[in-house]
Image (cartoon, rainbow, N blue to C red):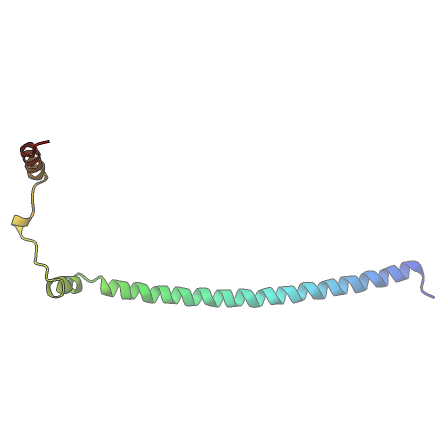
Length: 101
């Protein structure tokens, strides 16, 4: 016949064993999830490096200049195209003075 304290000890051992098994199961499950997240992070970093390289390739000034001249039909900026800001302010003042209110 099993005494009361012995039954309690056996019960506690069984409870602790089941608890440890559950903890181990959840830890291994979380480790698998963590591993997949880490692989996704590595892939995202690799994709980001590739995109940055492509962006720097597309942002080359000689390429943009060629597109601007050929496809957009823009012209190069000449020194006469650059205006002084004071001249623009004076021109708008004179235009505003001529327009009746």
